[in-house]
Length: 164
Ligand code: RP5
Image (tube, rainbow, N blue to C red):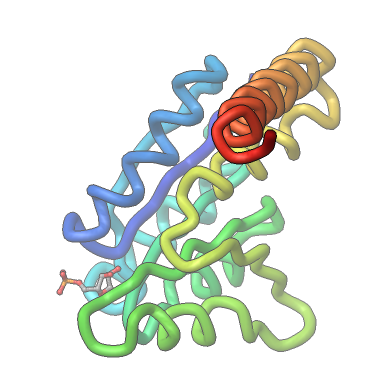
């Protein structure tokens, strides 16, 4: 199976981004986690990215906050799909990173998830790998069913409490 690369701009992103790693682990998808910054370590970010396909990666998740160029800079150097996670920071609640990540001009796409949307970034990467992996697709179906069952259970409890 292809690996997922999880790249973040700073170790301060780790508490949120680790949820992406947890989700990939839950699905048995191989992954690597790295800190590369578009601004602070541009050479290392580029070197990793240009070699990512031949190193066995199928998708790259890139998380960054503030003037968040990381996902776009990574996407510029690969034709692997890149999923951007805009990170919330203390000044603008993540709106800065959201706009920096999502507003890519035509030609270099970044699939942007919600602010701090690490779990969805991982799920989207799994969905991409599951296009050609029936076993992984089945795991996704099972997860949806179990999530649905949990909500129905909560609904039943609320209905029993409030509706007579
Ligand atoms: C971005 O700047 C990082 O992704 C992080 O979200 C933000 C702040 O980084 P630190 O100053 O906490 O290292 O590049």
